[in-house]
Image (cartoon, rainbow, N blue to C red):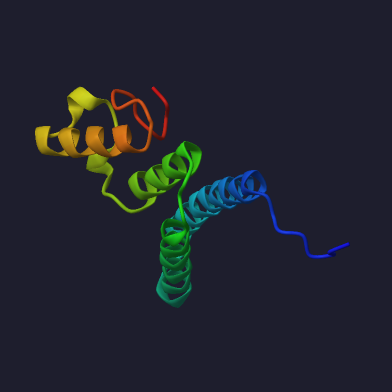
Length: 117
């Protein structure tokens, strides 16, 4: 009996989705922390935030849930606030880019990917 059986594809996908969900939560916490501090402590939080974004976006995204999580991370934690909100409130260029990105991620391009509205 092999004690080191390979991880099934389904288990690996579930793990990736879980890790990306955890990263989304941690990034939100870091976003709040950034507003509460300044100086060297603020720089350290920004460094942690950047490293976590880079790690989350470099993970393989093979399932629709993984791609959707990565798009939410990109839009909510990397792109400027002008990329969020109601579609009709966005600049046309931003709206077209966001719609395409959301479509590729399997999300509804007419809904805000963060609020779901």
